[in-house]
Image 1 (tube, rainbow, N blue to C red):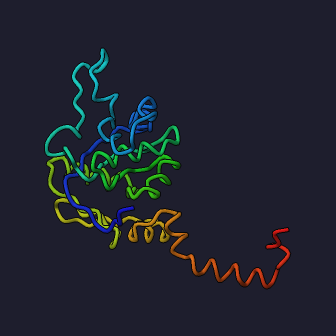
Image 2 (image 1 turned 120 degrees about the horizontal axis):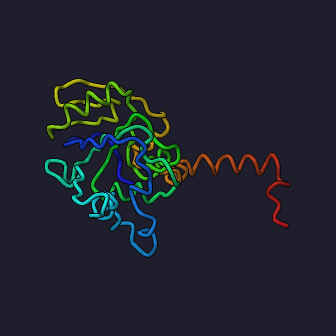
Image 3 (image 1 turned 45 degrees about the vertical axis):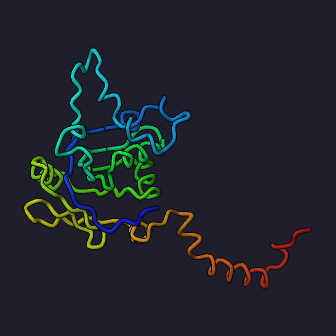
Length: 203
């Protein structure tokens, strides 16, 4: 997993509330498609012409937000089903961070497991940031300092669980974090074998 320290660039405002994982990636795209290709189909339901949406105009398809590394979203972003592929699709677009008022719980966990930083900001800070970012000027998300820097230079603080923050800084998912402590695990196993040999009996 790629370590995350800071990312800077345009931040695309997509402030509709309750954008669910079905909108982020259609379930039909999850069968037989490599993870690396899912980005092309992110937000497909908003990119494909239909009777209800004759002229799709997704902000992520427009300059200066095409290939933007940051998304500014509305409340309850990533709600709905638990598909991890929603995170893969967003990362396939080039996103490294999503800033929102709130996230779906499972989506939030999937973000941390895949190196996509979810940043929670209060609504007033989020609206202020989105207003400044609408011009396409650069926004910085700094996980080292735990601040979002707006185009005008304001530093908006955010909090992240310390263990998850360190895992992102180190580029480790749960498996990687566990393997990093392999020597500690082996030492505990050795002590436990001596203290409770019957637990380790193999027949």
